[in-house]
Amino acid sequence: MAPEAIHVDVFGAVVRLPRDLVGELRSAAAARAGVSSRHRDLSLVLDRALDSGSATLTHGDLRALTAIREEEPTLADAVDELREAARRQAG
Image 1 (cartoon, rainbow, N blue to C red):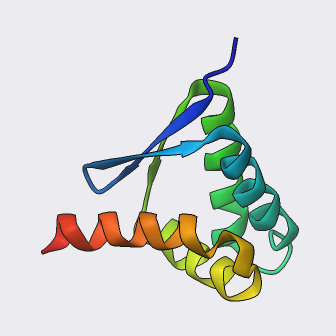
Image 2: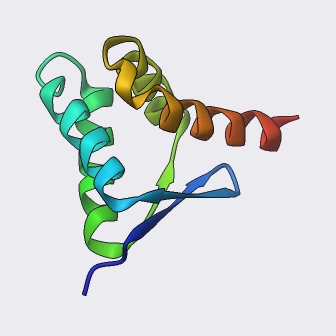
């Protein structure tokens, strides 16, 4: 049985996101994969996370998520949570 929450590592900080939300982020990234290799890479990372239950994000993944946030306001809260985790770890 697949985990209900996906553990997303953002520079050492782990954020738990609902599985369906990770799926939405993956779909949004996949929709932009033809335009940006960062989006393609992010969609692959999130796809693996849906199978394994965890993911580790890179700086490029966060940049792709920021672009998704601008185009998909319904995903803003999740992206903001991941970006805040990155800021906490950096500072």
